[in-house]
Structures are given as structure tokens and as C-alpha cells.
Length: 198
Image (cartoon, rainbow, N blue to C red; front, side):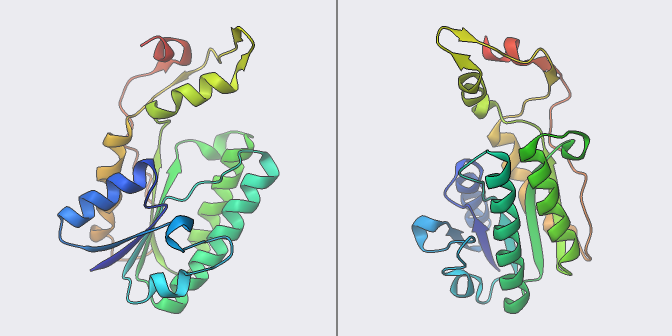
């Protein structure tokens, strides 16, 4: 089975590609560096030829509200149109838990991405994960001003990237278009401050 992993060279993508190849699948790790660009459409037709499954793990290079929304809408439209033209049978996307319960710009963009997937007519699985432990440093850095770091007192359920990527190949049990509320989060809540102290 040919599987195309969009964002296949990133944190989750590279791990997913390795697991799928170990399972005997033909896997294409697609990214702008490999000549596949979901924003411009460059290389999509060639990459998706004969693909049965696409796993979309692409992420916006900017987290600014307008830019991230434009990224996920443009990337989603281009990718899903190319999948329809190529006859891709299943679309898998990684999303975030509780994105429909906040006004955060990045989360709004992920909701827009999910809506495009749901309206595409392609069978799909959406996996909502919690925050990755690997991103804690960038969270702390974003709250830094000189020698002061401002961190939210809110609780969250962090998860290691290694715990998320095994859930991505679960499309095999899906026979029709369906959204998955599957969340690989650990059942523990931590404060951002205590997580950064680990």
C-alpha cells in the first residue's frame, strides 16, 4: 500500500514514516524539501499518484492568527483536491484536543482544517492529541521577556511525540467517512510550570 505522509520529515512525521515502513508499506515522506508543497501545489500530483492513504502532519511556519489560518485553509484545499483527483481512499490528520472550545487563533485554524476534511467526501480519520512535551521549551520561550518568563497557571495533559505516532496508522479499521475523537493523551493533568521544572 502506498502512503504519503505530508510533513513526513518533521517531529511526528519522521517517526510515523519509520513505523509504516517497518510494517512493509511503500511510504513517501513529503515536504517542501522533497519537492512537495501543499501551499503552492508543487509536486502534489506526482506524490499522490497511486497513493491509497494520505497522512497530513504539515504545520504552519507562522503561528500568527491570519497566517496560520491561511496556511491550513490553503494547504487543506490543495491537498484534498489533489487527493480527490488521484483517487486517494483515506485521509488521516493530526489535530488538537478541545480546539473547538477556545478562541486561540491557531486552534481556529485547526478547526477550519477539520471542516475542510469533513466536507471533502474522502473517508477520513482525525486524531486529536494533547500538547507535545517536546514543545514545552518553545512555550516557555514565547513567554520570556528578558529574565522573566510568564507561564499560564492552567493545567494540561502533555504527551510525548513517541506516544502519539503509533496511533496515526489506525485508518485501517475505518470503512467510511468518520471523525475520530481518539485522543492518545495520558490521564494526568499538570501545570505548565511543573512540567517545565521536570
